[in-house]
Image (tube, rainbow, N blue to C red; front, side):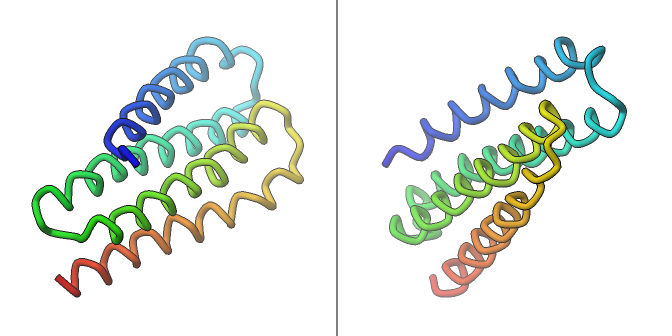
Length: 122
C-alpha cells in the first residue's frame, strides 16, 4: 500500500473540504455546526499529515513496514469515522451521527499507541 500517496490525497481532500466549509457552508450553518465542521477538518488534516510522516518511517528504518501499515490503517479509519461523522453531523444536523465519532477517536488513540509500541521495539 502506498501510504504516502494516500496521505497526499487525504491532505488534498482536507484542503478542499476546509475551503468548502469556510466559503460554501458558512452562511448555511450555525456557529455550533461550523465549530463541529472545523473540528472535523482539524483532525482530518492533522491525522492525514500523520499518515504521511508514518509512511516515511520504514524508509528511514525507524519502524517496520508492517508496523507502519497498522498505524496508517488505524489513522485512516479514524479520519473516516471521526472526521467523516463530524462533517456529516455538521452538514445534516443529524445528531445520531455523533455516536460514530468516538469510534474514530479510539482508532486515532490506538494508532498513536501502536506507533509508540513499534518505536519502542526498534
